[in-house]
Length: 320
Ligand code: ACO
Image (tube, rainbow, N blue to C red; front, side):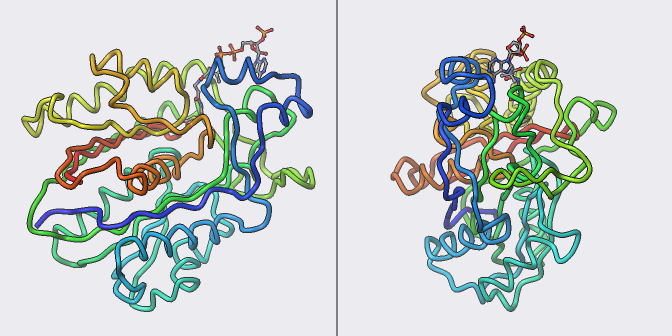
């Protein structure tokens, strides 16, 4: 038995904020942001919040998969910005969509969270414990971003993406995960919640803080290493991979990874220009867009790769 994605859904924040809009708040410009990051706009949530974006993405993924929420055995939500310590975002989603037969819990691994959650789902399916699992990546980073700090506020957006995965006879699925806690201080956020883009409220324990250049260097080294390790472990060649779907943190990071892997940039789809960095949600939002645009064919080999706070990294090689 192997893990297959059978449906996708997504729900970005409802309000589009362009680079020009941000230039009204902090000293920046569309030219600076776009040339350094590739970002032109981001979506922020103005009322739905983390759990309702996650639930909406979940409903759309179940519809796309052609299953009823009652068929789900487990809900895993990768998020760093839940509304509460408990109930978890996954339990809020379970209630909202009526997945009455599902267990539910959250996974915290920052921008790598969705990849870690997918690999966790795979181990439940491989063990035979569960048959159908909903994996969500959801983040509302606008709650923990300092909207007065131009170095960070231009980078992030809010959103959720989801996949329904199921144990099937054919295909392949392999994942690897890694962490280096000693490098945690490079990228931190001591609050999960509290700030508000609209009202100017600030989170109690401080904002996202990062050493941008260290994160950049970490990502462009670790992602190619991790992808090469995964392919080598499975005795698979880069030529077999149709797409590399990377965490959407920065266009220049993705270009640099493509160069280091010696793969054409066309194999690295991007939507960062429209969404910014949505942390745990970026990979499933991109997957959902590609799925709905008919860019993925059954049997395609794709690689997903994430990296982020922790520091953490991970990659998955799967058959679509
Ligand atoms: N608008 C205008 N000027 C700015 C802005 C802005 N939004 N932000 C910073 N600057 C200025 C700085 O003040 C600095 O000016 P100074 O030289 O007068 O002091 C100058 O631009 C250069 O600043 P740097 O921080 O050195 O800019 P850099 O070229 O490193 O680009 C960036 C910053 C885009 C964050 C880059 O380091 C990067 O992409 N890092 C990767 C980190 C990342 O993507 N993090 C996302 C979250 S983590 C994750 O998802 C895993």
